[in-house]
Image 1 (tube, one colour):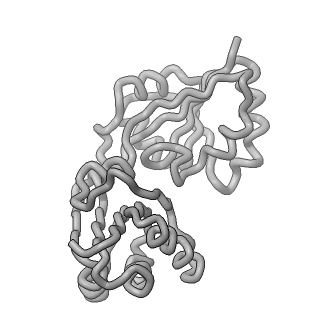
Image 2 (cartoon, helix red, strand yellow):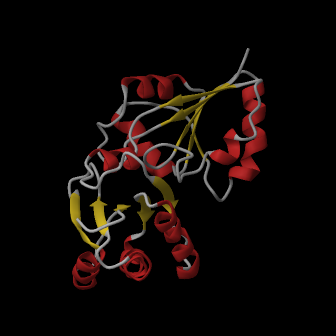
Length: 225
């Protein structure tokens, strides 16, 4: 019997943002690989799914990879989820997927993603864009990534920590210009969801006085609004 690994997208905030298919696959899996058991348990309890959870994250994914592949070789159906959104997209998953050969099935179960959620409400044109995920913590490395936006002349989509929004905006002003379009999405799909639109200098000034909290997705444009 051929083993199957399901890459299952889960809600990024609102627990109702999950597909019927995802619920059924989670219910029928032999076990669930989760970035954190606490976050996934909350989701499973919401839908009365009683399955074994095994933590699988950046700290242990290489160590646990061999045992997971062994389980697949025995014909198991395993679901992989991250804390929020789609696994492997700036979340754990790739280290496992890249080592699975054609002996097994790897099946995507699409759903919520902060990337597509942000793009869908963007007032910055995004027919063509570059996705940079989580930017490096070091300013020098972060600035190198921002130069890609300048070189390609297309908007960039990034995920950022609330603690680094101000420093990122400062780097954007220095590299791309103070009139660069910026759209910041905070806490998408959650109760306190907010969207801010302005130039890099405007938003840098605003958030130097009113620091942001929550999970941040940012669209960095290429010219003034």
